[in-house]
Image 1 (tube, helix red, strand yellow):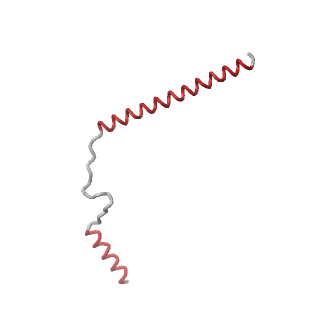
Image 2 (spheres, rainbow, N blue to C red):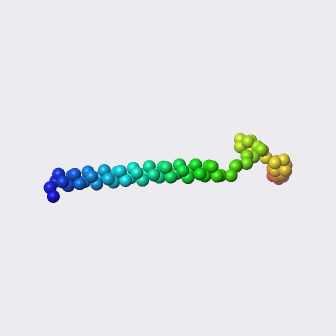
Image 3 (cartoon, rainbow, N blue to C red):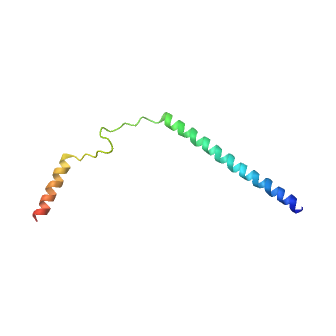
Length: 76
């Protein structure tokens, strides 16, 4: 084998490898999109809470307990 045949074989092997990687990554994208579509289609509906996520309301009992604890701490 001379150098030109080796280079030609190397280029062919490189193109085959790059083509296989491109094909497998493309197949992976298609499979992930398909599974995502199926999951979104059959996923149970999410129940939203009454309070919006930005408003973290603290229970009145907790506020009273914290107030009593602070008062006792300051009285010492």
